[in-house]
Image (tube, rainbow, N blue to C red):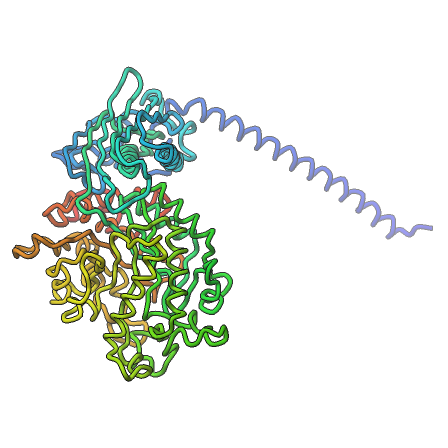
Length: 631
């Protein structure tokens, strides 16, 4: 028989169950009502969007400001409900400055009006081409340009596009190349181009003419620069008309990246090359190995990476190299791979005895390191071992085959320790050994290159390129990458002696300086940080001496050594400082970092960021919003 207490408990339980079911029902009805209200609100907002002020439509993109071109400069104003908004991007592009980077060297005419476009409304027509390879490369470069446009308009076009700017125009890009059928960047490549953009009915027509694929690609890059995303309009805009005649001042415009001190994934190299293309640089100098590591697994000599790489996750394969080379070539860039010898080698060359080849290198990780090299670990090749020259021939041949760069080569040749060789070869002057090694390396390079010496074979400036040894080198066979300070007598001596030179002065174009010494608490071996202004204003060839007029300067390169740099930090260290170098080597205008240069470089930095490059800012964002106010 059920007790009174049990009956009471069952009654309460049933009541609570009914209350629980009622509560759940009420909650479900409330949720349905909220959903319906949200749908109705969204529909009302969508229907009323055409009548809403732009301030609310673009609340996520700073619509409280509008910029107007006043006295050849963009002035910022507080926007109101009656203000016709103009974005900073559009004001900059339509005001007095050309906003092109690097600044063209020929006549430029840019319209002060813009029209809307879409990436999928661009089409290509190759009018003239000297070869199928050039045609193929033009098509691929055009796709690269379109992809950059798609990145800009991603998530904007079609959703937020303003109706009052008119429909997007069709753009027909016509490219004519009348010249070299070789699409590769070569020492003699004519990189000039002409661009003419004009309206044709309701469409636009772009004519790009050049003497090489690389020149045509530069024209496409300039076309991309006169196209921008207007965040207030929710659309890509393009100048209504433009003419640009352009050609570089120097044929060699490079960036060196060291991947031996610290390893960088392929993705970071590709992004760096893409940023180089945006600035019309043409040489990616890949310092792929050093005494710390040898991260490239060659097919012809896999032992070098097996003994020299940091680990299996820090190795570039031959397929990686092919990927990088192809990526660079479509962007008008050569990949110049450097295996630095006879110094700057380490454990990668320590396997000779066990392979029956004898000692391929000496002084590997010798102590005290300061007696045998500039930084640990030490090591340099054995110039008396014939096997080392056989090995180098295989290495050089594989470099040339993979990169297809056979007209220019870099032998390295920096910072040989005379004490190391004197310890092992006390019967010969170490400088004579160094000279003999260089000649032998040149000989095997010729064999690796099909019996022909490259047109330009570079060595780093060193004691070997100073008097009296400089006189023993043939300036018709060797060029010099001059890294010493611009005021050092030996830096000028190389140029005075008639050696074709690539300038990389440590006091201007070394990007690793200014971060202290990684070995102790000193300021480091190369001094203070090199600002973009220092990079831009460095013109060592512009002296007033009679000798400088005859200097055979091929160009220059910024150098990013990586003792204190790793993945994730590369972009901000290199950009936008290397963009400053790019304009110096392309245009080489006499003026320094003027207000217009600040403005154009700030715009170029924004273009790089839009491409996914984490370039460092030039200044506070307020200065970007108020052009010229910070100068």
